[in-house]
Structure formats: structure tokens, C-alpha cells
Length: 161
Image (cartoon, rainbow, N blue to C red):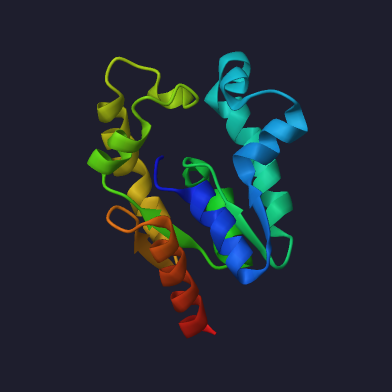
């Protein structure tokens, strides 16, 4: 959370002349309700089921840039879809910077708690190894602006080809 996935993804897609998708936005579009409502009504497991279906569908497409939700990597099937069907860029941001970027955001269900920083720390412990296990590249977004991150990614992709 707070790494810039959607913002960077949109700009990267524009730079590469590709279509952009945000998996969270696609879940909301398909269900007609906000993710926070899905969490309330169906719990995290219900949301993750819907998310996996969207990830499967989107990773079958060619020539797109996909920004996934932060917890997408929790499911092995999602990690498989991502790593086998595309190039995965892990946008790493330390917890302190994530907290600075997200502490006022009321649209993040997992952070609606007494101690959101502790939640972020626990999420990092759980998810960082999973992100790294599927990432083709790791890009630290903590000190770079959006344009600089996009240029870094474009450079990495050019080197890969």
C-alpha cells in the first residue's frame, strides 16, 4: 500500500503505449460495489476469490500494464498467473514511507484500525518475500518521483528485451 502502483502503472502504460488496468478497479467495476463493501459483506476471503478471477482474466491479455492490489501475492495461484504470464515489477516502499502516504486514506479497509503502522509492518513481513519471489525487477519508490520510477522501469524493460 502506498507504493504508487496505480499512479506509476498509468504513467508507465502511457509511456509504453499500452492499455492500463488496475485489478482493484476491475473488481469494483465487475461487482458494482466498493472493495470496502466486499470486505464487510464477504470478508477478505470473499474479496480474494473475486480478485483471483480478475487476475486470471487480466493476465491472459497481451500488451497491458496491470497494477494489482497489495494482497494479490498472498495467493499462490495469483503469483503463478503473474510470474508465468508477464513481467513482474515489485514497487518496494519501506513501511515508514507507506504510512506517510496512507495514514489519512479511509478507502483502505485493512488500515481502518487503532494502529495502522503496525498493520503495515505485519503486511510487509508477510508480503515482501512473496513479492520478491515473483518479481523480475524490484524498484524502490521511496525516494524517487513518479516520473523517475517510470523511467527506471522503462530502462529495466529495455535491458530485458
